[in-house]
Image (cartoon, one colour):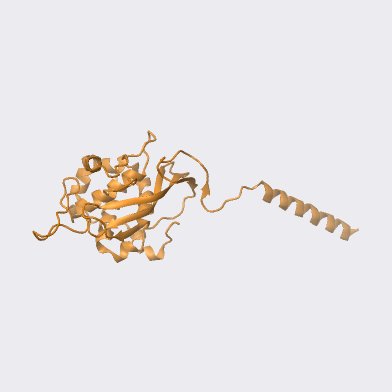
Length: 251
């Protein structure tokens, strides 16, 4: 009798476990679903991201020029100022990290600072309520104003970035903020900066727009120790990495 009661109880427990498993939604990392319409010119996958610790690319620790620009930009976005407010406050740091994690150095024409290309993934962050997109390829031009300026008469002219001379900390931060503006949506549902593609005039206007908003913070960079209090980002190799002027259909 006791054996029969034991077997019957075990069967009930098995049914309860199956019922519990059946009622729980399946979660596969970042769940994919069409939260909002993406750029019509791009192959788009919309998803809701599950918040995970973000870290920049290991390239940050290997490339001191890029690393300095990243920490300068990070210090602006983490602080309470009009520039950070334009990008939605400190929540924009995670988006910057995803953008930076995609960066690869490339040799492009001298007028290009950074170029984003390829299919885009549209993302809704369920925690911060931010909507943004990530391009499949993010190319940082080793021949452009991020790294170079004209050093001799026979060398090609490297354009300014906004009003800033090329190959300066101000120009580098403006390049990163410019690209961040292309991937983030504002509260009105539009990208903070419109795609500028091969439209050099629009690209310059986009840079001037960011400079107008962020001028005080960018010009104050030399007065700030930007790596201070950023310890959790200092060694990207110990942390998981989740998951332009431009040309063509890229922003």
